[in-house]
Image (cartoon, rainbow, N blue to C red):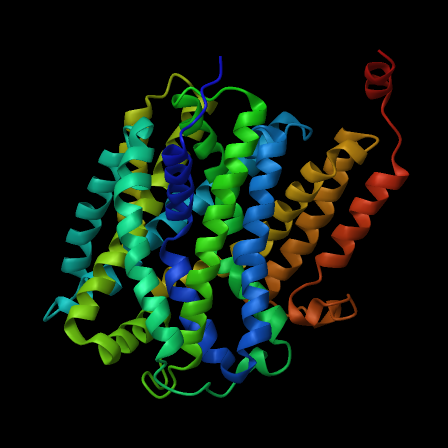
Length: 438
């Protein structure tokens, strides 16, 4: 019989989901985007919220509808292709980009400002300490709700709420001047900046992790899992929206405090010092380290759990240890380099992930599911690869005839058309027709 969660457990589940999402990218990208958007803050912020809040919430809805994460959602693809795609997403979210980034941001905001002579040695030591703690928490995933949802996250929310109130009612300047792509297409630029949070990819992973936590608490009925996941997702989305809006506004009003700053951690640190001095910097350091640690725990747990499911003979604890060692190693390349490397990868994989979510939500309308999934995903992948090559720096002007290619959104229309063809043009396969007849 399925267990019903108490109101306290449901709230804790929502806080845990919020904490999983609220990590490195969520803290460092909004201030920089806001600083560059300036007077174009509103459309840029709406674009950012679309990919950093709206799409993750829709993705959680798709996970709930499918009854599982990326592996379940891609079951209509050929088995080998589905596994490769799932593994690619886990690697991006895991040891190659997102997880090491949590440690880097924790270091640059939470530790580096307090060191007299920060360098490669201090970064190396912190990487070991950070991922040792993350690994220790990840080894016992059944305790995640207690560790994160009921203890760490409420403290983090209080700190961020205080920052949001202060920035909203006592900003340190007027809106700055818009620059770069924010001058011509601020919404689209904000939309693309939201890719950097990797929240949509995170939803494909965190959704399953939250489901696993519920199952460990005795929740087994599909209706209950769907309901609780939607409540948790709504809590997380609301919290993220509040954080993003306040940090975006902080960045947009920071040009007098942090002129010429080229990264989010620097803008945030200078702004906090100006507002609250050293006590504020200490509070910020604690908040950022906690946010990054909780996200790292979720990502490490998810990666190890996926590999353990893929190969049950692989020991979960050792997978966590190996993952943490790789993350600590990659972390030492530096934040700027890691972000630069991740951008082309995100331009390639985001359209595919969005296509998978759309297919999952439209699954009941698809005539031939196997053909539909292959067709739409291939179109999204091809267009994503074109965008990725452009982001790397290849000469791609010959493709400017494609709608929206010049602004990095050429994947939208072809993927939408492919989805419509799949819905209205493809007929049921003989196997599907036979099942429907039965």
